[in-house]
Image (cartoon, rainbow, N blue to C red; front, top):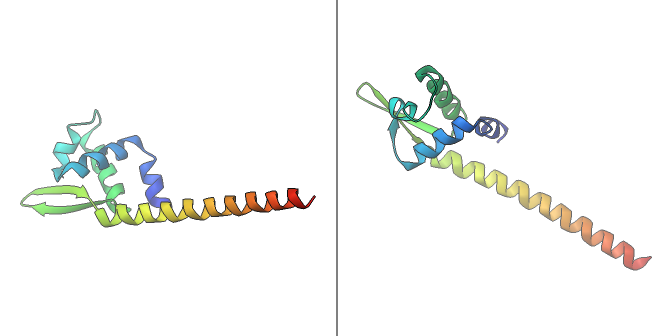
Length: 104
C-alpha cells in the first residue's frame, strides 16, 4: 500500500489513472493530455504499472494502458481496513475516557 500511495502522491499520475479508468489508451493518447515530454509520461506509466495500478497490453506496435481493477480494489480494501482499525481504536479510547470520568 505504501508504494501505491507514494505513486498517487503525484498529481500527474492521478490524472493518468483517471484517464485510464475511462478506457484503454495508448501512451501517445495519454501524453496528449499533458504539457510534459513523452518520455516523462512513459516514466509515470511505468511507476503506475510497477505498483499494480495500471496494466498494459500490446496491440501491434502500440501499448495500451488501462487501470488494474484488482490493484485498485486491493488498495481500497487496505485503506478501508486502515480507517476501520483507527476508528475502532478512537471509539474504544473515547469510551474508556467516558467510563473513567463517570467513575471519578
